[in-house]
Length: 246
Image (cartoon, rainbow, N blue to C red; front, side, top):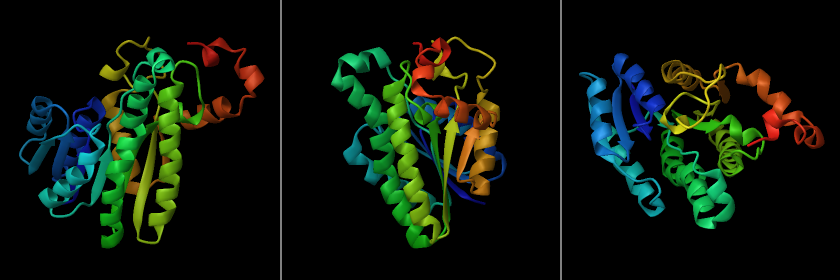
């Protein structure tokens, strides 16, 4: 039995991951903003031991205490999945620093504020797995979501450094670069064949974290696509509407 902490547990993908861990008989501590949705995720986990806490990760000064309470509830942590995030409103972020800062805080700063105490705990224990959901949007800035992409790109770099720092302690850090997934966060996006489904994406995430994979594209076909997106010369990139358009 593993002790699993899921932050942002009410997202569609995290809820699916919680059920996977529950089916294995793992012990869960779920943290999210909406207590009613948390209760529903916990109910779907069945008869395993599940504890929950409602928390707003945007309140950065409270996040160390959230992590500390999670450690106490689980009596230690074997695996943490950081799954919260929000794409925000790109157009609004271009006109309002307040909106831009909110996107950066949700997708980068709040994650760092949680990872610091959790990583320190696992480093001291010399064991553990950390999985953090980022995005393929962090691999290259595109007009349609570059504020969100900047936050995820910064998080990717942070995780690279954290992974190397924790290597000597036997703690693995998995960067989970997700392509678009058919979830409420993308409800206003036109769907196409490259959109993942939450259940399969969650299965891929759990497999990658269990294996200690340093960096996983989910679904895996994005590993072939993103080098082309990243390495296309900018002058060409700007002429291709499917890459540079809104």
